[in-house]
Image (cartoon, rainbow, N blue to C red; front, side, top):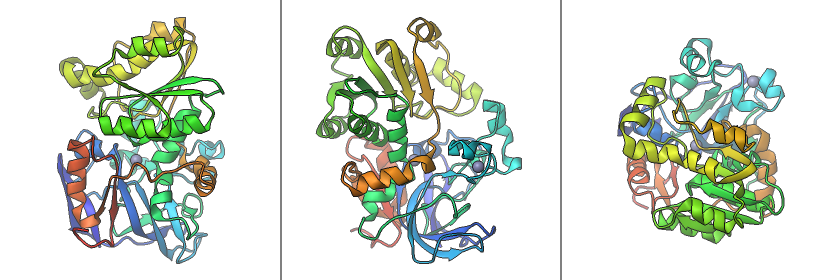
Length: 395
Ligand SMILES: [Zn+2]
Ligand SMILES: [Zn+2]
């Protein structure tokens, strides 16, 4: 089959690789119909994630048609399914508490050392995201093996196009959980740093949850325009002093909740690497680390801090004093995708949530490397790229 494979920093190619096979009775094989490039795929593209090997198939946002099932899979051939990026068994200690991204069983023991060293316990398995998270082949391919297929994938009705449901795999639940972690109450004023796909879905979710005012912060005009269309007020941080503006917009008190949907993009996972980047490359390093610090400064006393943005290592100059003296609540975490898929599918079906507005480009899988390059280099125009394995080139 054809699949997008990693060969090194800024070097991803569509190659012919072996077809996936059922290796466990709970597996299913999915024929991919749509798969997206995620902001976190750019960390792999930039070569800052350890334990990626040449030839690894990337992609963790995908959906398609069931073509083969193991003896214990509950899926049926021909069903259309969206697959969560988190691989979760459904039955372990963490899965039973709906903390699916902390599944104890999905990351094979021999792959756990590095994440256990960084975090104290190993991470769960994820699709197409290095051998740190299990080394599973991803979904930017014609076919993909889906473990625990009796638990994770959600069957979608035929009347909903791929574009409407694909993002149930990651960014929609991630944005939703980002808003949920901000514990939004009616009348809350919420500020969101970053208008990438996750930030935009966090904005939409915060509005659905009843926030009276949502303020979006970014510098790409097109992304700010999308936020405005959703109903947010906007701040271009290149033109405006963010902290002053937020104080003014919140009646001098500070905003009730802040959501950091920026994360430490382009920063390595390894502890030493992270500290070095922050200390040495003061330009980008300080800017990006400062989004969260700025958020902590701008939130009111007793306010809520949510971090859906991806961080992998450590940072220094952490405003611990502000956390304590302001009495802040802070929540983050990899998304527990399976906890949200059913409710969010219902919200897509009844029109409460729209997921199609941010797709800027649809490309054949064969043009995936072009998609990565442009998504990385032209962030204003390329807001979200969907790859279609069956699509004709150049359409
Ligand atoms: Zn993603
Ligand atoms: Zn589990």
